[in-house]
Length: 106
Image (tube, rainbow, N blue to C red; front, side, top):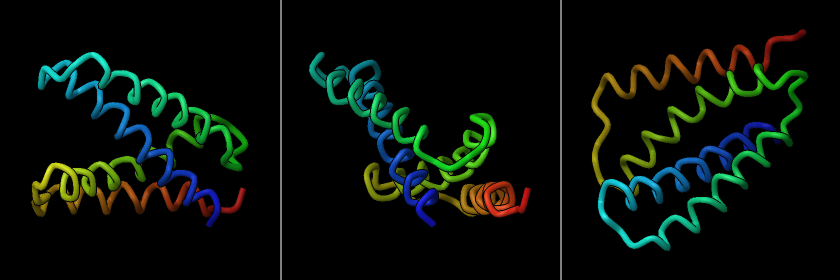
């Protein structure tokens, strides 16, 4: 369960960091939007080193499913857009795959 919490926090910081860059490059926000983006992306990368995965590739595969679900939550709560049924279906499939990778005995 600790790893799931780390993955969710990592997703938040990655999405926040990328969103800061998105706003700078796509929404013409001032340059200082990049500063929290840079620090957020650095913290995201640091957090991923704290999960108990034996290999980086496996950690990233698990993270991928969680990232997709977290991105749709960002879409809803920050950008105020409702994910459609296909967004939800795809995210559930990805979360199922991530949980298989995370909880399967090795």
